[in-house]
Image 1 (cartoon, rainbow over the protein chains, first blue to last red):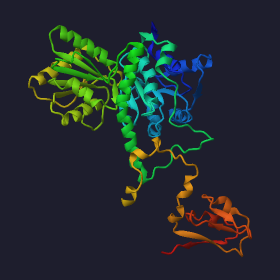
Image 2 (image 1 turned 90 degrees about the vertical axis):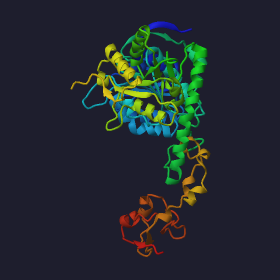
Image 3 (image 1 turned 45 degrees about the horizontal axis):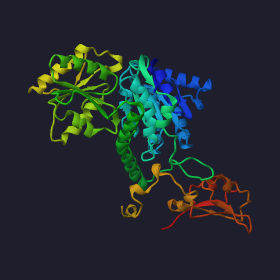
Image 4 (image 1 turned 120 degrees about the vertical axis):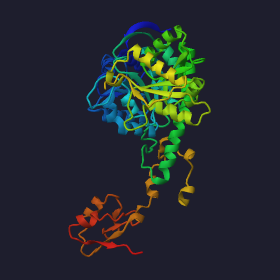
Length: 391
Length: 98
């Protein structure tokens, strides 16, 4: 059994990567990810982790080095935030297209401009379609657990895909939480050594990353889509195994009080805990409210989420990113397109909140509930609302 | 496209579209792309082999019998670099006919 201890979430993630026995870490420091890579570089320098730490000159190079390392058969880890992820953008698609199971801890931060180091989820949402498995942690324990699980999910030979572990910048990255840190023997039991699908080897030459002529590109994309869709079951399996070894249960959508709820909140990330506290308070006052927290963002768990909201009369979706010129926030967009072809269609009440580190007080969350309840009782639905926006 | 229909289906390729057969690029006959072909005036040629060195396809070789350069037209794309680099101007780019 692991030991429960007070530890900064970033350090817990670095520790999780160490426990996963990573071979290569390549990263460039950026707020608020910095502590993750600082600690990993310390582990390597102090001889506590037998890995190559590649200090690169940019995130573009960090991800490129990860691609090379993973192609050579190394268990590979990186971490970044916001502009760093944006600079990696080009290589993200190459990592997934080449089916290299790199793991990235992404300390979610808002994208410039205006320059903001603070938290929202606009960085990952701008890279939504990069072909990586994408998980959302809501607290330190999940951030640590997901980092270990990400290697098992991504390296599963049935899919072989890279994985992003999203953890909200500052709200999680810089907070000290009680976390049950797994011990090495447990992690070794859960996470087998990395057996890559193929490796760069001079004795058996292959070409990784050749040109895909028009006759091949379509088939390549279908094969990649198929692998990402199949990763849903692989992730569920990895979570079941995790529960067996560590006694902590995860599902693509974690539901609280959704069974009889008339209004269900849908959210991903650290604000889930605030929403759940508010929902608990509302329940105490007799309100039929539940929370569905999205843990798996890609592949999107359509059936799991539909199961959580189909009986509700209204769904409150809280997005932490804008989709400029689009129909609303990225999560709401997914929920609405999911419901279009389903028999039951609860009203979707959309909010965009907590942009660029803006606080989301409990009263605002209660206000969202009040608006959704009115709509559930037959009020007219409105377009998305940006919470706390000054006129 | 009818030519695509004869190719393997999407499940039949290795993950990541790796090429697992070394040297398979020789199967791609890039000479089909050519609109102009290089032709040598071997009387003017000084056999310096600058064309051999500059050919981006590596498809110019010196003939064993007289060490004069010639292109393998199965792979020569007709880029014209050999003609441009030739010291004596003994290579002419000639339009391919139908």
